[in-house]
Length: 481
Ligand code: ADP
Ligand code: MG
Ligand code: ZN
Image (cartoon, rainbow, N blue to C red; front, side):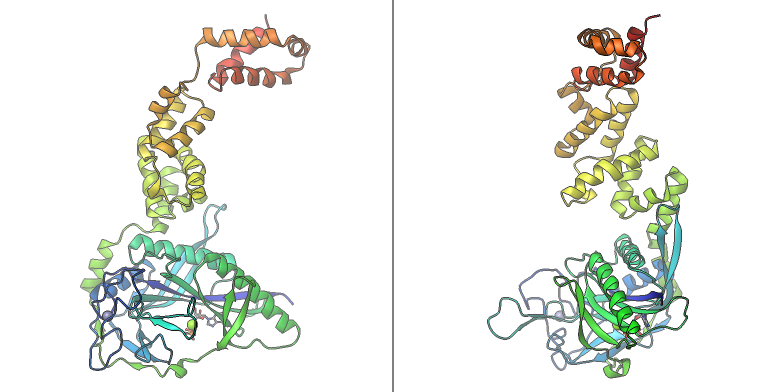
């Protein structure tokens, strides 16, 4: 039987605020263990939480950016469970009345194909507090608990089970991450754990409408892991069904070293958590005025930007998707195009040479020594014929290394293209004289030898000869009228 995958993703994104969600403790990353704690986030008795307004506002911002409906009335709930990193014995989250619901994220399915897209529904986005961290590594006996992370503000973004493959899952995660970064809601730094994903995966006979039993793979912080875990689960579940067995609903973990998932615990149900309304926090009333204000402050979002790039600059959807993957890259591209208007050429250089070098050094566009106007200047030098396209590549490498202007590099290194007829004629004559056999062959009809001559002249000129002119001169001299 042929099966298809059904995937729903739950993402936890840490919200970029100065302080935690219910207390004044700092959210700075990487401090001494238990140095950012207070009676509230330690869960000591007799204290009351105070909701951080910025978390709500950023939650609203993300809700609007993902086409959700912002609830005019929502409230926090206690999710009860016991674990050493959870000092209160419950997590303050939202349950039956979340902050926002019913949105979607649009993903490109085939970037080559001028923008085929699919909308993945969002069930809900709600606010909650993070738990602390149990530390097991490097400790001789027992474990330690670091509560710096307890009470950090999170937004949980829950998708509908509408994702059909590992590729779609990754496209969804990338799109969501871009929105988080564009809107300033989260830095979505995956290495710091500020963007983590639980993947719910089930399979069903192709074409069937009924959902299969799912496994939930917890807490992955890499696109690659998500993709591999999904691929693994599809095969694992298919084998079970093919052998006549039943998939058990359970929580599993991805083991990167072994390249497989393994069971962690049987899946808990909502009632296991004994959710009830949080009595220490008043329900939230969000009015239209607040929503409108947040809406008005939203920047242009990745989707809109991508579509605008295609229209305004007449570049392929594929280019536009890459160029708008971060705000900084999009800004770089637009700044360069404002100085050199052949957008496709600019795009080629940005996506090619520039990104290749940055990726090699594991750097972002923010770290590039080359500024947009310098890239534009380089392209103008090619267009004016001052340097060849080939020389431009080496000039660009120097620009990336030194941050110098292209004009300066061309001058210092004497890279100006030689277009002077007299000088070129000398080189051409030299090559013709030194290769009588090839000249004879050419004149006897082996026209393909033209490439050989051009190559020789270019080499003699150190790559600086104007190839068009060299061609013309060679023709003239090899084919005397
Ligand atoms: P929880 O994991 O908190 O118990 P939910 O029922 O809200 O609760 O589901 C969480 C995620 O699991 C959602 O992203 C949803 O789309 C996804 N999901 C639910 N059922 C399935 C299924 N049968 N196959 C794949 N994903 C599913
Ligand atoms: Mg879940
Ligand atoms: Zn605190």
